Image (cartoon, helix red, strand yellow):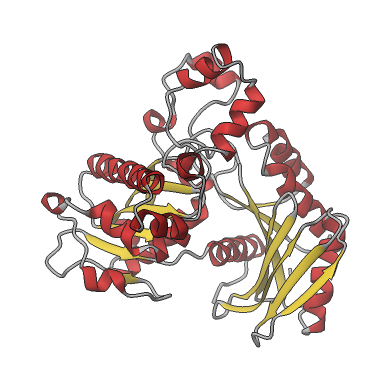
Length: 407
């Protein structure tokens, strides 16, 4: 490996590629962008270099190979080409790593084969992640490519937390267990929260609430995840934009036997037509809050259901941890929806949890405490940075493997 300090982070979706080029000397974003509508009649590449002068390219991207070649050309136009000796690694977000991948991993043919073997437990995500890896490896076969797994941070969960109470042999045969997701975000935010408190992560217990269109909670003790809300798939847990979250498994049987819905139809219902959208026809929290404030009963029901589930997980994870030093809100809703934060923590003063209305109302891109000074549990808003976390892990791994220094 060269002495480069830059990492290109790729997040390949089924019809999109998000990317960031990060200099690990100071964490600076040298470039970022998004290619969307890959494989459609008209695609779009939005590229933002360090200067901030955003460029848009509208053309057909028939596949991920064409999309990534266009990304490479945009980077080269800024003097940041993929052939640069400053590029140390390419870090890939991979959603599911199963039980085998519990840490960032240099991608080999064998690793790629195992990621492909996990497609049945992540059919919507791993195939696209694999495509991004294959194209990037073809573009730079000499460069270390590192997979950073959404599930890895949650691999520290004790067995009694990771297991479902079903026949053990059946579960083992079909790899049915709770894996959890959004792991890079939970890892980054839990550590950032400890720094905000001026403490070592090993000394801190944190409840992290990652609230975006997808949403998850985690209980982090001393820097290690001990429980998380998502399970075998990202469907379990909190009420989400379009996912139901926790639901009686018997509902599936009922809808199939009595409602006549096929398994695929139920899958679509629970993943794409449930959650906030299922309750009020809308999955944008800003619009839901506006409608609720105007007296829309369905929007109020959606908001209250969302908050109720959040409070259940806060209370449950408080019990799991025994002692809570901080609750951290992150991601799109968590960072920007002050009413959600206020409602989720209201009435929890007996647990040492409170939010200062004035601090909560401040909009900022910085990590900050929003609880009053007297509160026993710090309530924080901590912007997540999954790309930086992926870059850090990829950079640290390739330096360890080559005997380099991160300084």
